Image (tube, rainbow, N blue to C red; front, side, top):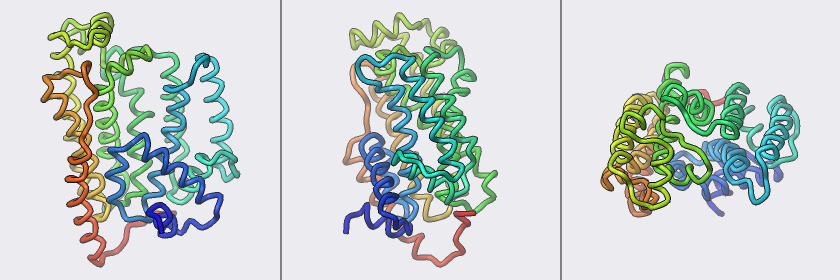
Amino acid sequence: MSTATFELDAAGITPEPLRRAYLHCRELHAHHGRTYFTATRVLPPDRRPGVHALYGFARWVDDIVDDPGPGVTPADQAARLDEVDADLAPALDGGEPGEPVLRALAHTVERYGLPAAYFTAFMRSMRMDLTVADYRDLDHLREYMYGSAAVIGLQVLPVLGTVVPREEAEPPAAALGEAFQLTNFLRDTAEDLARGRVYLPADVLADHGVDRELLTHCARTRRPDPRARRAVAALVEVNQDFYRAAEPGIAMLDPVARPCVATALRLYRAILDEITAADHDVWSTRHRVSDARKFAAAVPALARSLLARSVPRPRPVLER
């Protein structure tokens, strides 16, 4: 029996079309979110499909915006997002969607009682990517990150389960989503520039004498200017503040879920370590966590998760 099949069986997902939908989301997660996918493998098997569905939906929509293909115009992308919205609303209202990603998502939303507002906020941020090319300050960027990242943390929270009232665990869960995304923005500065976007706040860049033209020069020459290095260093510290705000949330989770989130935090934060070790050069290479480092983080986390599963305790409420 494959791991994917075992996860679906553990979650009690039996209808074949629904199983195929979840498997599709799992493939999206494994291919596009390798760091987080590694951490998800530490979760109890019955909770992994829900995480795969949420990630799969986010990736599916994000690709409409970030990987449109040749000849696709912003108007085409906006029209495609309109189609997703038109299918999403009835799917979350109990309809039977034809799109596999939406089928798995709708099942997860119903199972864990997720608010539709999370997905409305997500779609709003995806639309911003079609019209907003830069952000004046961190507050402006966080308007975007609420829908694109904070709500992802909020969506996953009921799947993981908590030992405190959910509303108490929500702020650190949202902070962790933002922390992950800001790490991605720093790592992918050159890649985002190629798409015409600068996610690094303009006021922080300006404080260090950096503008879009200088960032573009760094990306084109693959040689970071000292001013650009200093701007990235300042934003690494901002990013670390998000991680510090997120850390207390780990103890609020169901014990069997804590190793997963702790591993994800550790691996994403390691990307910042790589950026810092390179003297904040995010232009000449794309920083990543090695497979060996992922393995070294995942194995002890799995052991902690298995130990937590072996201790009898009241289970958190995972469904309505």
